[in-house]
Image 1 (cartoon, rainbow, N blue to C red):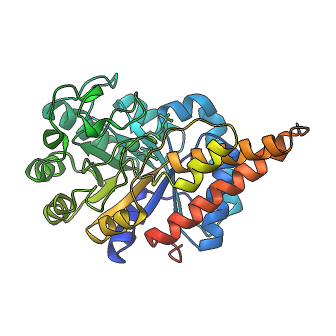
Image 2 (cartoon, protein in one colour):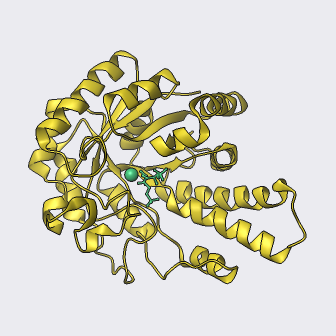
Length: 328
Ligand code: G3H
Ligand code: 13P
Ligand code: ZN
């Protein structure tokens, strides 16, 4: 059944595990997640960005989610709006059956520049008041991750959407986090602790101090009634880069957040872990490989099937590594 996200995050907190939140845009991605959830007996968080909702159209997405909950009646599922940019976006998600919404007030509505604290509180509090009265959970964000527009990788030089602010100024301040949760009543808070969106997060192999673990720990201590969320948590596995490049792709060498680092984050209180890029890469690699090796094929199912299977493998691996397996 579809449940509010708070329910799953509370259970994860009580039992010390994390939940992957996977982005979707179409039927095959939802199927991949549900197959992985069934195999690993995992509760699931499925999320759609504004771009995903536009691409898939709300009515298709709503019915796909209803189909998933009908096919898997024993798996608790959350449908979450990823990076809602306004109270209107969040309300239209709720009207379409989403059981959780993110009001990302860390940026202005058009996503171009960091927003000030008062704006963030104002829009987030408005969403919390309305969403909670409808039984829907709310995630907020404080601090600045790498830019969504440029595909991430911003945190190394602090430029892009984040302008002239230094690396440290962009990370979430524990005092401010405490105040923000008190001011808004959010169920979950996305924190900036060194990750960025997209494939190009780090240009060198991370050495184990890519996440500001002390900061996670400190924020977690201050927020007994709010769950921490880590965006930009793809690991960008070397083998997926290699498959893409072996079969005609052109990805520059890059490094993501090692799974072991995420596991440390979960030990320090992270409960929701956003993963999109790894699944994109898995599907793209599988399609490239199938079509390069079988240039005579043109049945859509011939390349959709291995793509879906490749995404399922990533989902199984993350569900297992984050500890959500066995908790459905
Ligand atoms: O937060 C970003 C997610 O990876 C979704 O990306 O806005 O291109 O759908 P998108
Ligand atoms: P990745 O780009 O690392 O997969 O992060 C996705 C994300 O944070 C979606 O909100
Ligand atoms: Zn994100």
